[in-house]
Length: 553
Image 1 (tube, rainbow, N blue to C red):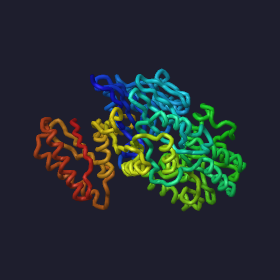
Image 2 (image 1 turned 180 degrees about the vertical axis):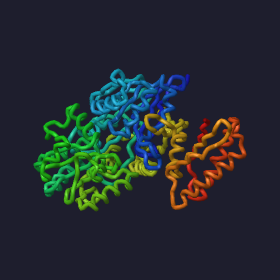
Image 3 (image 1 turned 180 degrees about the horizontal axis):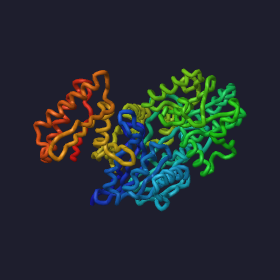
Image 4 (image 1 turned 90 degrees about the vertical axis):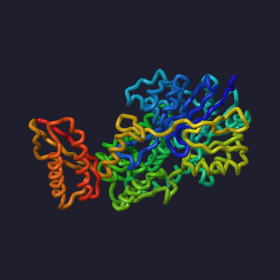
């Protein structure tokens, strides 16, 4: 008989930061059941025009959906839950999440007008669920969001620990402390493999505490006499509570700006957090309060074009504005890839003689991921036989392997998206196969693959511009003056000349074709397209995306 195996396969988040999606399977080749841990997104940059969200290609698990037991979500950050509402309709399986994460999942499905209530299972903190041969124990950790969970996944063959995102915060301010006792108990029972966050493996010391950030922020704000605008990650509820705390201590009213900030605030309140705080005032009323008595907390800490911060700084927000000698505090870090747009925003703030405070010149932020000393503690509690780094770029994961070897972890394994790893049985985990993996783009409301024609066409148009030519052909085969329009093609004083050149070329080409014959249309269109693109290239250096229309009257 074929032996049962415990399999691990990351489809996202290994070799990159973001877009986390991990598969586990138990059984043999003929009867294997699967679970999915997290379904996240990453955010597109300017190289993919028109696309905001990118998520893992789920094709591999969609093919196995009849054997899928459910989706387990570790916490509510977008890089862990952002693609659930996009992928789930192709799976239609159960979803398991703790209360705060479940509230945000419900909101996502409401936006898509999907009733998820029959499939969404709310898991109380620090409890277990049983899915076939998987016994999954939710372990309370600390992170930069409410209710982060590690998963102790026990099977008949052994136990692995999937850490999710975490750090060791001795004073998280909101939510529980990291469950050190439970992690030690899991370690005593034996952990064959720990699949672990690698984000801050290059950072020495400890990640730091939210309490220390609160003290520093209060000290900064106590000395300000004008308007204060703080921007932070909306999902960091502990930081949000600290801003409320600072507002009360400095005698200021607080105003939340941005849809995400309002959404997280309401979700936290619904789950019983953020009690006994100031009541935030509406942005429309905040303008009536004197500048030394108001504090704004806004989204857009990464310089997002449509974020509240960007609109406020550029003077286009309908209710909130800042002026000379006000103070802006970026209580956040720069996510790699956002440097250009964020520095552009910060330079504009400085140019307008507004004071700016960031993590570069003050203590206003701590990370939600483990530094090296945090990792040492986790290793000492869990004592895994093997470490598999995830949640990092290749350089992070490679360094994590080296670090684990320094910590005398017996076995390590470096992997990437799509690797199929046999965790158990065996002396050590090993890569045994490769699953198809990749990325999908959310293009408008549709999921398209990387090689989608719409993406390629849009990239081409963004680089080279667009040229459209319409030929009007009468019944007797005569043509009128072609209608030529273009967008995104550079112009100068000779612009009309290349249009005249194209008109001459079009008339010349048409003389060589029988315009009454529809059989020749395809060749006619292709010939006009090639020759007109050549003219534009010679005149401007651009090779525009070209569309030829033939209208018969």
